[in-house]
Length: 76
Image (cartoon, rainbow, N blue to C red; front, side, top):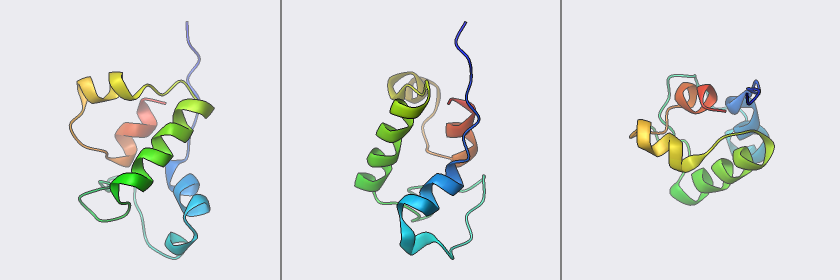
């Protein structure tokens, strides 16, 4: 059985992308559609998540069509 890791994606995003430090980001935000991250930044974050947790992008995309923060966290 794979152990789930508690990830605070909002905190990770704000730490990695300093220009978002003062922006209000909630768990319900969709990262691309709400213009929080561009596609390259999103891929950068997703690759980091794969390294630090058991997040699998292929599995995530089979179940989800968007990149909502709460959905991503549930799959980490």
